[in-house]
Length: 369
Length: 234
Image 1: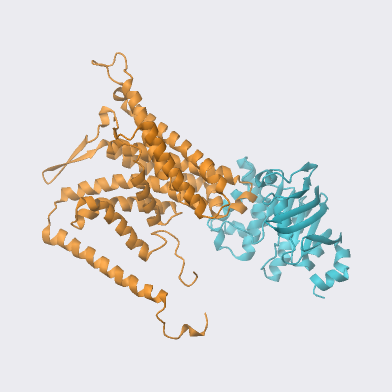
Image 2: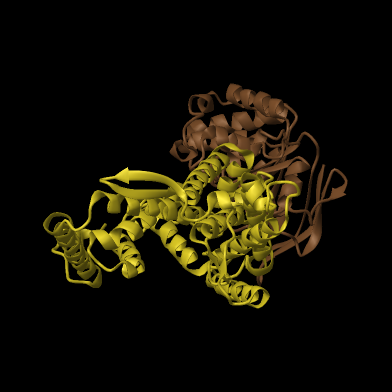
């Protein structure tokens, strides 16, 4: 740097932000600590079982967010664009699972019980596996064509253009779903064995907590899928090629990697994860409609940014974090539960003010920028 | 082996290569020398399929390859080691080598080739689990060349392999290039270091603003007064 490095800092715009940030941070932190103190120590309004219940629901929703967030992060890592239609890809998966359960519900298995059992009740395990396979396949196909139709023609365009295309694709898919499936809200027909709300009972302080089967299924499956994805990206030839393309497309092409094919596969993998998240969402929350992908999509995008966009473990961590904050936050701060979205986004703003690159994102030193 | 005829390449409105024609025979080291912006890297990028020519053809082993995509050209046996080495910084040395062998499907072949690379570049063996970005400039150049040799190319395009390296390392790199050539790989070498390049090359072409202005045997080019004053600093 030059000679004026040693002179006292002037109040330029950058210096203002340097002062405002810590003040803002201290205010927010102070508020949070004060509320936590009031709720947890002074009032002691909630007993342990409330916290356990919230923790469990936070982990479940966090797993779903994490799966969707991985899709945002994978695509961003390779194309440097936000795939705003990703929530709709999840919605399509939710519908695919819904229709599969409707079909399996309608098939009567001959000679099994009286009255005859439907296929989905007679073989709950098989029909759930089928639902996930169908949901993942349909969403993966949707992701593949989304890239081919909406993004590939714009590959050389300035970065804002595919973003607009993504928003357009998102509206298109929402409206197409509304036209095809009508705007009504439908109930997911879970197999009897994993009906919503049924589960294992856990007693804490004389009160009963239900650990739902759908919740356990969602959590375990999302963790397994995340581990699978991580191993795939780290160890397989496809995963390594994805990393190579993400870091330098031109050099990747010089290695003989078909860059377009790798981009297609990235969308297929993102879509499959979103599809799995969609079926989980349907099984656990029970409702499906054309708008079902919007909020999880936005939340998962938030989670991806929170973890450091482009960073896969960051997306997993961000998703879990957001799920837990959203679930525990309102109660811990003594705020109405209806404000959970406000809290989730507020926490995101606070974190991004202090770490603009996200929790695990690369830190660019201010001097270098 | 390689026949380039009347190649014209544009960057938008900029006419970067203006009717380049040259050839390379099997087993040769041919060097392209020229100042910055003469079009040397553009020419290599066109041969390797990253750029496509508006007019003109690239013919390789009797086959027109100028419309093929980059990955198809690698499969045909032309490997381009780009300027600035372009190591995948967040991948390990091993993973970088694996990417070099992306077009090879035989695992055993990849293993053998990797072992051969560790023999030729012992420093890479010591660093094989390190991330590419943590290597020094010379080590990165070795890795870039090893990565380029992984698919066993018939023709190696080297873009500025000596850039930014200490003189001792430059000598070493050029020894390796000669060695690679002795083992049967033809080399098209783009260099700023004209002296070193001419000393190992069989033939040379001099590029100026997108045109070939001089060609001939390396010694002839080295003794050409214009080349001496413009590129050999004397």
